[in-house]
Every structure is written in C-alpha cells, then in structure tokens.
Amino acid sequence: MSPQVGIATAIAVALHEIPQELGDFGILVHAGAAPRRALLLNFATGLAAIAGGGIALVVASQASIARLAPIYGGAFVYIASTDLIPELHKEPEPAKSAIQVLGLLAGVGTMVALLAFE
Image 1 (cartoon, rainbow, N blue to C red):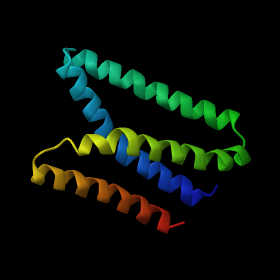
Image 2: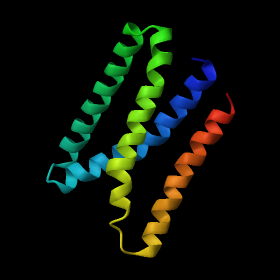
Image 3: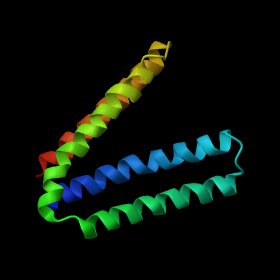
Image 4: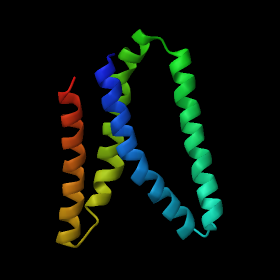
C-alpha cells in the first residue's frame, strides 16, 4: 500500500492494543486467574498475534495485501455493528452512554486524522 498507511495502521493498532490488553488482563483476573498467570496468558496471546502478523508479511505479496485490506476492514465493521454496538445499547445510565459514544467518536476521529496524512 504505502508507508503512510503502514504508519497510520501501526499507530492505530498500538492505540487499540494497549487498552485491549488491559481489559483482557482484567477479565482474566475477574474470572479467577492469578494476576501473574493472567499476565503470562496475555503475553502469550500477544506473541501469537505478532507471530501471525510476521507470517502474513512473509507469505503475502504486496498486491494481495492491497486486495485483502477492504475485506479485513469490512470484517471489523461487521463485528462492530453486530457485536459491539448492540452492547452499548444495554447501558441504562445516560452519562455512561455518553462516555461510550464519545469514545467511539474519538476512535473514528483518530482513524480519520491518521488517514488524512496519507
């Protein structure tokens, strides 16, 4: 694709993964895992994701990545619209709902800002 898209993607992944990993750690501890074990499991899944990304970079050609990017993007939009957004509707408190919507808009705004540098 281009170096700008790669940089924007790397920043977006970092901004997503940090709170994601903290949330996963909290879920594991809440489910009964010892904090040390939860950290180890979280680290192992992170390494698996890095390994998968490395394998994809080695196997895929530049042309196939460009063709597959819209499919992956569509899959993420599908997941958000069918799994995540309905969960937002379950929050009865308006203040918490407003915070969730602001977080969603902040994420969209960040992506727009990152892609504006392309």
